[in-house]
Length: 217
Image (tube, rainbow, N blue to C red; front, side, top):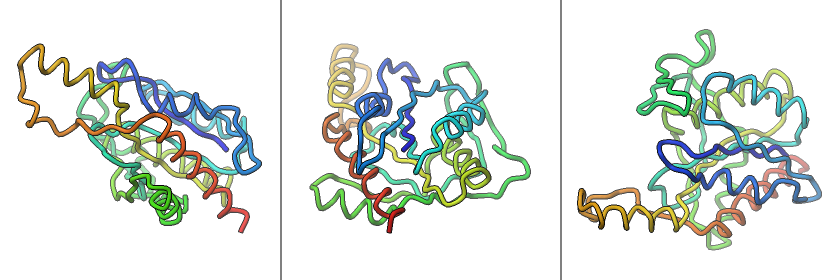
């Protein structure tokens, strides 16, 4: 199982997606080894990096992770759009706008068992929801691109993207910064939700198990 996540970006030194990848890298889940890859937040070379990881590991499934600031739940993405519309630059300074693949389809549908994963997570008392947009930054580009690679090179391999919340320490740091700088009232912030790392790791482990069980069925 290939599990990817991004390094920190947008002034954040930490990305919970990368921490989850590091926690699960090399672990065995449902009898399958997890191969983790932490990706740079750079659009240039994204397709080559994803293709390289997929060719290297020939995984039974591909799950890509990213941070959605302010998201209070595990967010299971259903679609990747053929559109870049960056609101902030990536870590290389690029501001991408326009189609990801000029001749590609408008959308690609994730092939993870989204409903089954959500049901398993909710049964484990982990907040989870399905989403119809992965945004307009590298998370969406990763989902759209990975689905295309899998479709061409490993058809039938489940592939998708999961957004995760901030870590509590990140939110605590933001609250302290707001208090100290007195630049914004706390009630005006919409990005203060968080989830403990161990809960997020448990959620992604369940997502991997459910995906592999679905493939074996």
